[in-house]
Image (cartoon, rainbow, N blue to C red; front, side, top):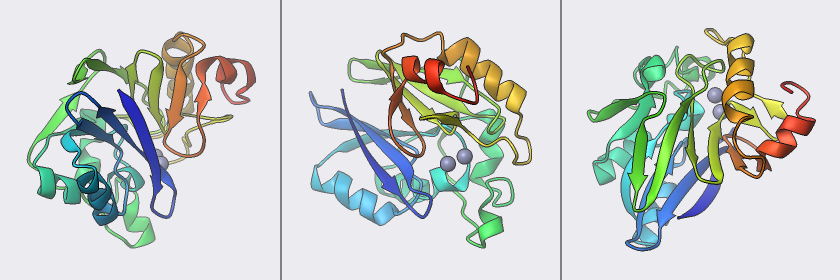
Length: 207
Ligand SMILES: [Zn+2]
Ligand SMILES: [Zn+2]
């Protein structure tokens, strides 16, 4: 499995493409914006999209979901706690910027702790990490964590939105993420990459 990423949209939300070189299939995580551009890139490499993984439902992570689903007819994976984000611009926060983003799609599959999603030989396991949003999750595969807006390089996700909860976020990071191997590469929803070991040692918000 190879991981590609590109920041999309005004918030530079990292979209991650997990690619299985054996058969050119891929999973797209958090396609946040610029759907046509993203689709052109996927098509230009003839990547066969198998599904869309969402770490949470904020609008800057779901803005290109509809474009991709219309093009590839694939399932969308999200935790039920954030399901309303797909249809409600108030809840996904886009109403505040006047963009009213939704991702109204038919094939939504709710994920919960321990669920697995496959891409070729690679297994992604769902880790529930609520706090930034009620339905926030990370996706883990050996050596790699797609962390969404839960854990950043030197920071953590905001918890001052409605339904945010710092205690909950902090607990999830300490008990679930910081117990992963130190050399696990962390790929956050915004900004640069880091490792579990570095965050355990240097993150000023959760140690
Ligand atoms: Zn967010
Ligand atoms: Zn975000």
